[in-house]
Amino acid sequence: MKHDFSVHFLRVLPPDTNFGEAWESLCFALLQAETRDSGLTRLAPPDRGIDILHLSSHRATQCKSHEQGAGGSLPAEESVKSLRTAWAHRGQLGWTTYCLATNAHYTGNGFEKIVEAATALGLRREYLEHRGPEYWDELCVKHSARVRDRFYYRITADEQQVLDAFRAAGYYDQHVAEFREKICRAGFRLIITNNRTPVEISIPFSPELTVENCLDVAKTMLGVSLNWTNFGDLNTSARPSISITIGRKAQPFSKKIAELPISAGDSLELWITIVWEECQRRNAETIHSLRMLTSQDEDRAEVPHIRLSRAETTIARKEAIIEDMLWTGARQLISSGASTE
Image (cartoon, rainbow, N blue to C red; front, side):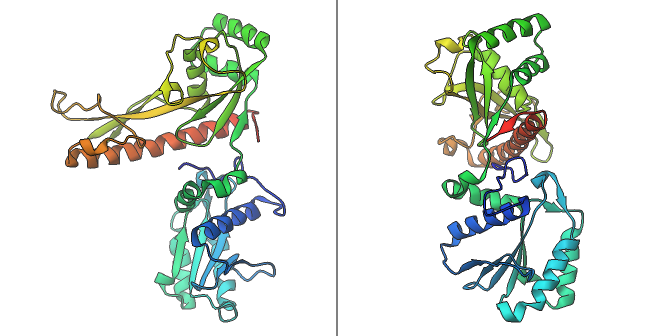
């Protein structure tokens, strides 16, 4: 997903006082942007098992959240309790469809338990909906300007985290010590962005270090693995290919940061494309790793139809893996002491 709805990245903005209220506010803002309906209402206490009421469509929405976002899982019990409360107020509020808006998925057969409870109350299955994190992610992409200020995007790393990244990338201690001296002397920071998520990482760095050094730090901090992933049902494999870019133009690995057209505090982008290939006999007709396809490509139509379908499916799956990888790396960076803003 392009967004992470965990406590690490979703901001609690006044008048909200806790994470649950922040999730409810985000859902309300997204529904307002999507429906453009002034009849959308956020209900105040007392609890009636409903957080948001859409009068014109007779839709009731109850928001449930987990602090770990899609990395966590929700128990069914609280949702069943809310449903029963909402059912008791159905006549008063006039809703027909009951929707559960969650930033995580339910545990095991949790949603089936909610369906069973709804059936026992007399609510038909077609009037019970679950909109999970993928749905809200799509709305965040669609209405990004409307909700951007509700997220922490900037992660500020310290010198030790950069040095740890160098070590994890395989640099010898003598080189790490040399880099540390250059970074301390420079008093210079870079912003590392990427083309897959809104995450930005501010790192102390040195203009005397190279683009390749920067790439290694960015890749390690965000947990990007260059390994191939096999998709047996498609008979394909995919891996990421990475570079550091300015204005989508890849920069030579050997160039020093000082040689680039940037100043302290400017951004460099970790650009991630997807390379895919068929896993059949490796001959001139079946190898496709030389054709790099990404979601930004405008020339996909040039690929034969039967291959386009497999390519897009392979790429979509690998993109999801990479996005999850990036969010996991960002969360680990915050857990190790980086700050957010």
